[in-house]
Figure: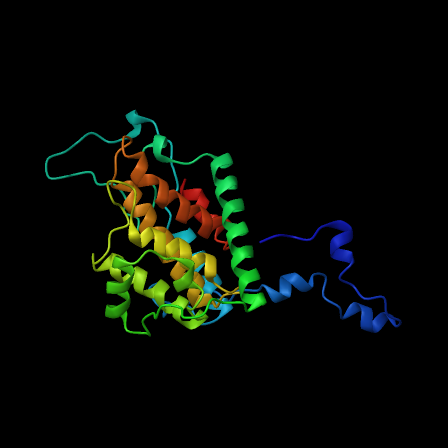
Length: 264
């Protein structure tokens, strides 16, 4: 959240006549607009949000589940006793345990995001021109099994991607999550050449923005899957980590999920 300070905040106040009306204007219109209801007992973190408020609640919930780092004196720990075992506090959120050698630099992330934005602009320009080639190859409809077979055997060339509607792109994102969770597709190929990673990248580039809260939730799921996959590889496997870093970086910086960068 960004705060407006000084003159910027005052600029939100309209110059009006009549003191009574002026006193009714809130100090910060942004504060009222971004008010988030408290998380109730019935909140389900696994349910995709349907509104902006539910999405913000989801982000707040994920942040509260992170276990804070605590520094303690080793001598303060009580001595071991028979029948007593020590266990680490669990964390339901995904945290990064990947070796530092696998984490990208800030400069690398900036370059990749700039390249990605240029690709978005090119795709947008093609759509605006409406000058599409004739006799484009056919693509599947909405059947997940057909898309799984198609994606695993076809690279995401522009001749396919330019035909996919926004609804199909959003459905594909959900499919990517399910395929990963069901181990039908692997984001972590030894060669670093994962067809799933390629399709995720291409789908992100073709998305129309702004996005619904449920799609932002889906993007966060994909980023978390990438972080978990990166946790499973060693420092020697830089080729495997590169596409994972690329997807995490784009979702965090281009699609406004900046808090995910804290996991790095």
